[in-house]
Image (cartoon, rainbow, N blue to C red; front, side, top):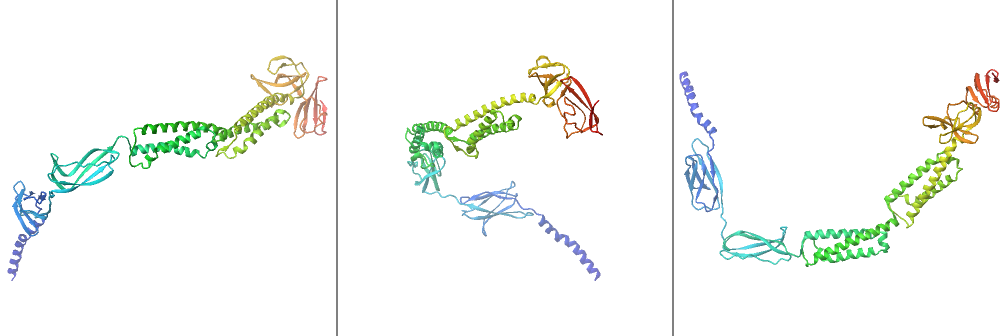
Length: 514
């Protein structure tokens, strides 16, 4: 028993590789190469390429139409009987290759017919279809090109398809023969493109006239340019109206149309220019534009700013000079006159013809008043330091200069003068500091620091001092006590030409001559 089983195992080991080998080969085998040429119902053979020596089989359904064998170069040819519009299956098989099958459709040949209805297409230069018609074509008959009288066009070129011509005879027809005639625009025709250009030109005049009809100038009807402009646009519109009803189709025109249209356009342009010039002149007199308002307000703002600055000056505050009131009145009148027009700066205002003249006159008056004010103010400012001058004494004789800083003499010693003691009223000239002095009624200058000066000044009771210099004595000033103990008071009297030194005792609040 054991020997029997052992023999069976050995047999199985030998048989298994032999039976398994074909299965592995089948899985790894590749397809045959197969290509089939196109077929139609007139084909007598099925041709193509395949793996060399492969068997080629052609079937229609289950019926085999023919077989063949591929050559060593891989080419094949299978003879078949008459074919219909079928689907054929072509297969290539060879040992150790997997069979490949291709399904191919047999194409139908166009039928040659004896007569057919041809469609004729008539198209414009932009390829837009103008019309169509039908014409019967007969095989072997002479071809006559279809004609059609289409207004505004002349035939330019033609082409056909679906039939064959030989010596002007139809030698072959297909199911759908067609003939296309393309036209170009005839002479003396207004094309759609021309119409659009012309309409654009006319629209500019129409719109411009329409926009101005609500203007005061147009309503005034006081200028002959208004009727001339209106008539020119009306004539142009009337002349071209019938031609512009449709801008998508051409229109026939007379030989004089272009010339007439050009003249009318030029007349519109001329009358429009004349109208605009007259309107501009009218508006300038009757309308205050936004730009005019802004310019006027800017000019008045400059005047007001200068006036407001002047109001803070000492000369204006005195109110004594007649130029002050004249200046104020001129500015006030100007502002009152333009106030109703300057409230809204973002719209135009109607004005009378004298408005601009009145405004300019008022501005001129302001400028004159301002100039007079400045002259008076300058004179005031020159006199101001002298008016601020107080009594004083010049101890040592120094040079005396006139208002142009030219030396006119000397002051003399211990001379009573009117002299400006405030440093802010000093005058600086060519590197020198000058004090303003009135000597014997004459205004002039002395160089600051060239002499000792005493002033008729009193100490401020709200301040505290350690010394004082004046032409007054302590008694002249009410014996002030707001001084340090031992403070000195240097007094100089012009009449006696003597200098007195006083000392203060804070314990007794008494001034005594030292």
